[in-house]
Length: 233
Image (cartoon, rainbow, N blue to C red; front, side, top):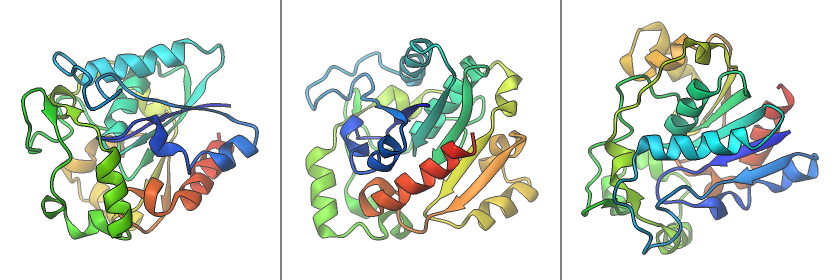
């Protein structure tokens, strides 16, 4: 199976390096992505928006003859959902790592402080305590040293979706900061944050208790959880 791995904000393909070994050992082909504007700290970011990143993922999907699995962490969840909408017949499962599908008209996060065309990694004080669970000082230093400014448009652009067949693509949510039971309760209560997720017809939930960056805090466990979800596909 071809597995396309889409990182969250401030991260490139290398952020998946400790997650992929069990996937490769199982015989899968992994394709961690570095999205436009995240090639380096000095990469140009003007004009790069959410659709730019979605189109980059769609281009990778189109490069394969067989259907693929998409994995999206954090803001990457909105990106893979846009790709599912664009190619619902080419994706056998969408896996959301501490994230979920972003509905039409939604934005990933327009509250993040920007600097020109970029959104640098904010100070840790701007994150919630749940975000930082298990992210010790060594991991925080590593993360900040490798962090690449995110193109502002990706954070602030509205999601645009067109094909309701996206709701037929099976999904797995790997819940980290908050338990999956909370997401299920929110869906039952009609909370707008999970409205798009609630419309997906086939959703599995996996609990992996840690902070918002399990690829750093629990990479082996994340790899195992992704592998189990792929095997269900």
